[in-house]
Length: 190
Ligand SMILES: Nc1ncnc2c1ncn2[C@@H]1O[C@H](COP(=O)(O)OP(=O)(O)O)[C@@H](O)[C@H]1O
Ligand SMILES: [Fe+2]
Image 1 (cartoon, rainbow, N blue to C red):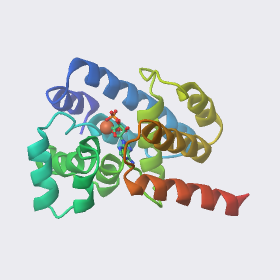
Image 2: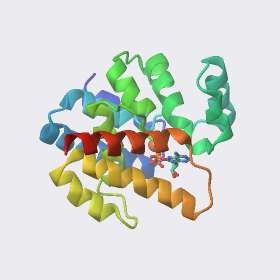
Image 3: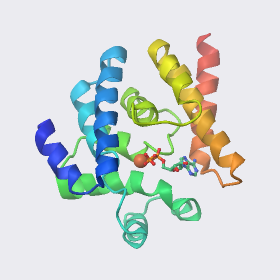
Image 4: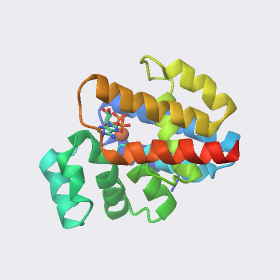
């Protein structure tokens, strides 16, 4: 699918603000893909559609999670997590994208998962550091992303966990597992 068509499709699903964010993620994801050797076209499409389901009603997302037999544990945690797996499902069903690497990058863009693929890492990180993001710690992660993908990813996952914990919010465990996986495998390499 061409970029223009993909952007038109997703624009209809998003607010203007979220659309601008999406274009930022797209540009950042392509840059990261170039830098770290991921598939640029897949990065482009995964980025464009990563927040496809962001504004679906909570009830609709809940229904998809139940009907598609996604982990029911998701329903016990922040509803903000749901748009990622539900988005992957709807992008296949409604947009017709069938590439499993693209769909998985959408599916895991919020929680991460142990054993993330290169493309999944690129999308997670691009979502975190795109130029429209302004929050404490983002500049440090932008700098790390210039040097090493996993180091930047670890920092962004740590920041996300710390952010939730400081607000006394529950943390969906996949994000802890992502952190443990990244930090453990990095130690083996070093
Ligand atoms: N492990 C987690 N447990 C609970 N909430 C999480 C977890 N990881 C991320 N979130 C929350 O999910 C929300 C959406 O995250 P994300 O999809 O990365 O960004 P965006 O808001 O751009 O869609 C954020 O508010 C974040 O704090
Ligand atoms: Fe998102």
